[in-house]
Image 1 (cartoon, rainbow, N blue to C red):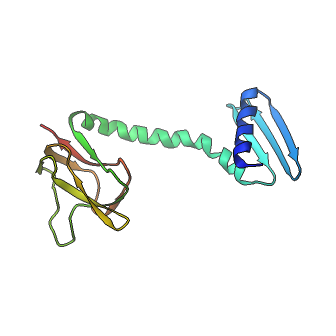
Image 2 (image 1 turned 180 degrees about the vertical axis):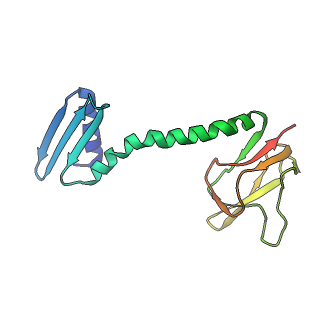
Image 3 (image 1 turned 90 degrees about the vertical axis):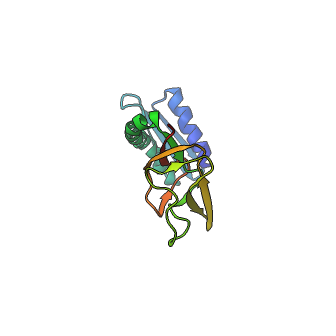
Length: 161
């Protein structure tokens, strides 16, 4: 039995309202127990495939992880209302300078125009120049030099006025 089939079976049992289902096939024994009184959590026991237990358990842990970033992003949302956020278009390593012996592209307080290079992001040994799509003044640099960045991660706050 494939992992996808087991996941579909768990979903089906949860929707059906059954409190317990046992399935035995050849050398696989599966028991699915749903506890409607216990916060609607499902317990799944698979004797041959121990990965299924670990797959079923991280789902309740996901909401607290998502709740924490929402609280953190609530504070910068006030800054975002008056400033434009320049975000990383790729995953890689953020550099403020074109090379170690050169000066930084921009500082806090620098006035930028559309098309100015703000930083470089190294991805797979290629250095990609990140150009500004807006004109304004750099208010804050949100990433440290030579640190990894994710796709869509905020890099700079720009005051467009």
